[in-house]
Amino acid sequence: MSAAVNIKNLSYSYGTFPVLKNISFDVKKSDFFIIIGPNGSGKTTLMKIIAGIIKSQKKRLEILGNRIETYSRKALARKIAFVPQISAIDFPFTVAELVYMGRSPYLGLLGVEQKKDIEIVREAIAFTEMESLAHRKCDQLSGGERQRAFIARAICQQPRIILLDEPTAALDLAHQVKIMDLMEKLKQDKNITIIMVSHDVNLAAMYADRLLMLNNGKIVNIGTPSEVLTYQSLEKTYGCRLLVDKSPIDKSPRVTLVPQKFIDPDMQSRQYP
View 1: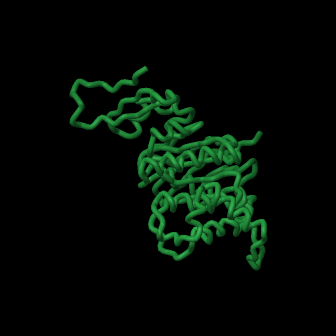
View 2: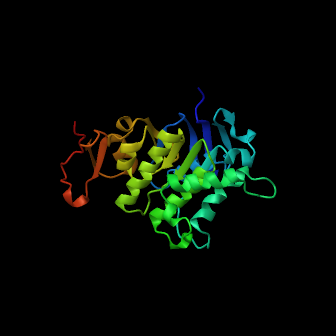
View 3: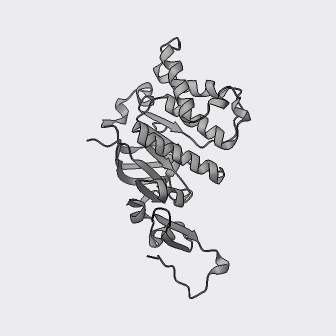
């Protein structure tokens, strides 16, 4: 079985500044795959390359067994949906209108909607529990509601892979869990491969099938949360003092920051059993 995404020797530079440095990995179909790492490690650039938004100068990138350059833009949009970091919305579309934009890869030259398109929009809105907000203007939504609206648009593309760049950033705890549960539901119910960038290593530990840790454009570690989230790797990558133990919920790694005021000069970091 081919991987959902396969990358060999991928590099990217902004001018003379290298952002990604000869990285290789694959993402299995129907996996919940989360990319972590400090600011500036190349996470967003990597996501944009997978989405086909930017092209790397050196790469072998396969999407569902085919080289990415063999896809037309419309064909790639039927395989991959990208949900970027969401900030303020200043356009006057309703939620339903925004979600309907996800059907554009399937519309003909005249862009005439069919009965099937309308039904898919309704299903996407229902799946994300946005029915009561379908006719509300997007600029009137909360952060969590906006994020679900953009995810509904992505679902409307009927992709095999959904890419999300920090979808829980700036959301409160309840909305963070709701977004992550929604991603898990997409994986389970629709067999969609989820590839996500996250700064929250504890959420990543609880939800990811596999984690990729990046730093300075290179892969630090890749594997299960227990394999990747060791205090040795985390402290070296993030450059701060940490404690790593096990969550009482599912025994996944739990990472706790140690503020400077609690650090004894002789204190050594520990990973508890």
